Image (cartoon, rainbow, N blue to C red; front, top):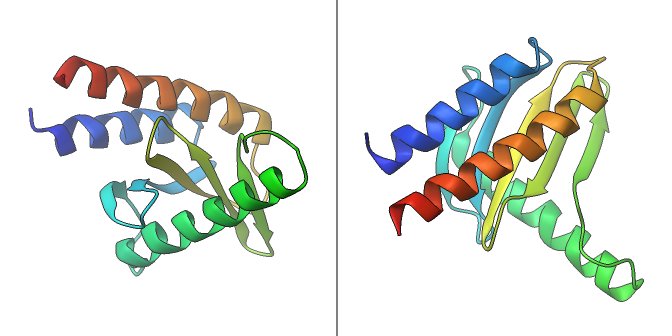
Length: 126
């Protein structure tokens, strides 16, 4: 299986584990380039990667400037759902799009598991 295929498998498993609360997700590099994604129709995958990297970068700067350590996740709550970005190793982010009223505890837990799965895929490929 290709590297992209392995990442897409991790993303599918993440979405399934959240019971429908995550309606789309992507794995992007911190420089804004897309690695893999499973997104609803009409969502521009390049835009998700670029904007996810932007918000993660701003969160990192804020945490550093305010002496808050490393950001664990960044969440933007919208009236129609949320966008959550979390670092997954060196230069990658997991970005999730949620429903309006998701089970955030489950999503955060599953994001941690998915981050470990991504790290394992990368490590296996070395």
